[in-house]
Image (cartoon, rainbow, N blue to C red; front, side, top):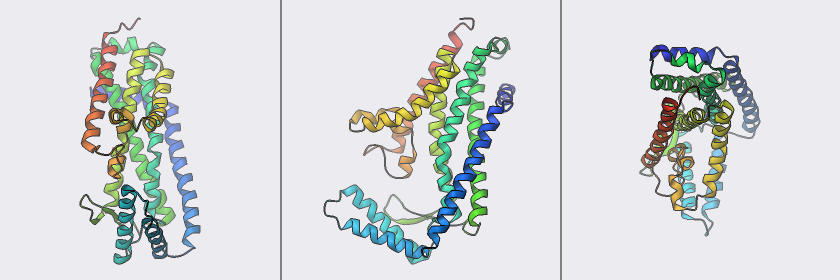
Length: 314
């Protein structure tokens, strides 16, 4: 199995396309964070962070005066006021205009990692059929299951590599742009008991990475299922990317229905639980994990059945 995974990794990293993806992501990180730093520099000239927090607090208090404010928005604004008070009372700067502002913002590029990983996944299996190399691959003593798993693992490892690059480059770039003096800055938030607490910024960032990368795993599973069934890289890549964007739109349209909580794309973004704003009231992290696990098993079971049972010459 190790040799199979090593062989699949060689196929991925020998391609110029792979390095173009990595280079483009690094370029985009540098560009976006440099632009953000330029804008933050102009905002910093308007006053201290304490003044900015005081203004934000006052804005929240004005919102709380609205009589028609619903309970959810009232609770959210009350929590924000409590967080602002904690910052001011303990003299803890917010992440705005610090290296963490750019680092946390860079986490939004995880969707780019999902796109790149889906492209590699869609071509990993279907490309073998298109080029005819699948026959050479299957004459080896390794079973079809091992071949399929090795391809799947190699694609996931590629996604993990992109995540590591995203983290390292965003830390280095923002450290250079803002300075590393705020590297130990805590994240101020509200716990489940409604208390204001200090959390590790690094731990929270990696939790965001972990939760966000779940969508990558699911999209990769879809890509493998489609490529196994239709043996077409274009269809596997196209359908996977279409699912990523259309699924989000569809989940918003059907949100008013109770059954929509079982929809794949209603659960695929686990950061909704990290932020305390689930797709539907009553949905928990455990519920979403169970739903995603069922979809994961189905997608990969279909991939395995089609790949192992179908005649290669067909």
